[in-house]
Structures are given as structure tokens and as C-alpha cells.
Length: 408
Ligand SMILES: Cc1ncc(COP(=O)(O)O)c(C=O)c1O
Image (cartoon, rainbow, N blue to C red):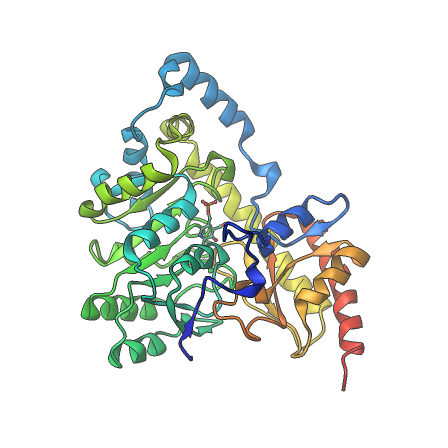
């Protein structure tokens, strides 16, 4: 748990004459790979394409354009959508007001805006040492002092470690957490740890950024509530319709204390001037007609089948040393391979010779080093049960060969 500086001058990142980063991110590479014909890709947290509600989208688009053609004009954030978001959050046990809902272009923009609002160059930040690269991407521009926290694969973030940092005097700008369906680990934070983390946040005056894009994709009967359910002031909540309707809508939301709404609006305006109001109207129309609950039900039951297929195939097909996490929500499984296997290298062989792809664990390491080097993230949402079984079978051949060729 050594604190580390994340610098903006990482040589691997590459820079052109304007000082801009030009190296492609592992996610951009994975996106390219995923579209290669014939490949079975477990790389990205893509929703199942066959479950996109295309008919409902086209009906909603026609309704919106037929009744309110002014939606194509520049416009204000859509109040009716905020109303629906308040109702949606209530189903997760979160009470909030429309005035606390800030509409964004996806959860990624929400992360970007909140980090930009709260950070100063070089400031401390508490985050898990394996975490979502989109967050890391935003953070690195601030050259933060990272206080990395390990994650328990059954109960989530090591809250004792967070406490140690705070007791020893750390005063980070925020604590970043993905309590449900963690990306990339697939772990959910235990209820006891949620309570303790919140207590620490309140005691030390450090806000929690709670990223929840997978919270509505839960496979248990009694999922834990987001931490935002227990605190209006200390938890800044981030979500979107990307995983539950379609990512290309780019409609997301924050729930924040009202005093943050105006500064967030100023920051947002600097990057994109206006809202994607057409998409907001279309999403609101779909929620008006009560479409979402049955769609969520369908996603949960299909993804649960896919999760179970992936877990049972990983357990039976991959060599004994692997240990998949068992997600209660979300779309990711994290698998540890025997130490010494470099999964970034393995990916090259897997993709070119066996037509199967995954994300190498090192793509998620917050401070670099060997963390995640021998692990892989597998997404189960995008592929059918049959393709999951076939893809893991292919992967088992690649891994078996890597183990047999390991030095020593
Ligand atoms: C933790 C986390 N935050 C944000 C995002 C980005 O979501 P969006 O597509 O809504 O921008 C993702 C996923 O892709 C994610 O896993």
C-alpha cells in the first residue's frame, strides 16, 4: 500500500509536439479487437446487442419528433427525465430530489466533471489499486498522489486500509468506489463495509464518489443499497443508461448536493456547451410508457444465465490454479492465472491464433507494477451462452499452452 504519484509524463503514454497524449489506451485497442470478424470477445462491458430495445427506441423517436420537433434545438436539461431518475433511484432505496439530479453525457462524463470539480494538481486521492481505467484516465491529468487500497475478492475495498490512511493524516480530495459489480473485479462491497466507509467519510470530511453503472444489473433478491441511500451530503453518485438501455444514448446522471449543480453546469458547458436533449427526450419517453422495469427484468435474467455459464465453464475448463470472482451484479468476472503468466502477452496469442479476446489485468492497475499482470477480466454480457462456452474452451487451450511453456 505504498502511496504513488501518478505523473502526467509517463513515457509509455507517448506525447506529440503539442504535449498531447497520443498512445492508444488498452480500451481503444480492445474496441478494435472486438470488432474483428470471427473473434469471440470478452474484452469490453458491452451490453448484449440482441437485447437492445430497438423497436421501443424507434417508437419513442417517432413520438418525440412527432409531438415536439423543437427537441432538435439547443435546450435545457430535461426536467421530465430528472423526475424519472428520482423515481428510478427510489427503486434502489435512494431518496433524492430533482434539484439534486445533474444530467450528463454518460457516467464517464459524470466522473470527469466530479473529479475536475474536486481535484487540485498533486492532491491525494484514495482509490482501489485495481480499478476502472476511465477514472484513471481523468485522474492522471491532475498528477495526483495516489493512496492505493487493495480489494478483497469477496467483500470489496479494504476499508481498514482506508482508515489507516486517514488516521495517519491523509486528507484526500475524495474516495472513489464502485460498490456494485465492480469494474473490473466483479465484486460487490459488503453492507458492513459500506457503513464503515461512510462513517469514515463523514468523520474525516472526505466525500465518496460512488460509481454505480452496474447497480441495476443485480442477480440477488436483496441487493445492498448504494451508499447514497444513507447520505445526501457525503456521497456523490454517478450512473447512466448505458448498461440498462443503450450506451450510444450517452445519457447519464449525477446525484449531488444542490450547491454543486451550478459549478458542474459551468464545467460541463466548457466542454460541450449543451445537452443531448434529443436523447434525453427519447429516454424520458421510454420511461413515460413504463418500459424500463420489464426490460431490466429481462437483462437481469439473461445476464444471470450468461454469468452462470461463464463461471461454470471457467471452473471446469481453465486450469485449477485459476480463481474466478463470483459477481452478484454487473457484467465482469476476474480470473487470476498462475503467477508469472503475462496476460498482456497472452492476449496477443489468444487473439491472433485462437480468435478469443479478454482484457489483461494490467490495464486496470492504478499504480503500475505487477498488479493484475497475471489476471484477466472477462465480460459475460456481450456473448451468448454458446459463445461463452466456446470462447472459454479456446482460452483454456491458450492458458494450458502458456503454463506448459512457463520458464522454471
Ligand atoms: C465504473 C464505470 N464508470 C463509468 C463507465 C462509463 O459509462 P458510460 O458509458 O455511461 O459513460 C463505465 C463503463 O463502461 C464504468 O465501468
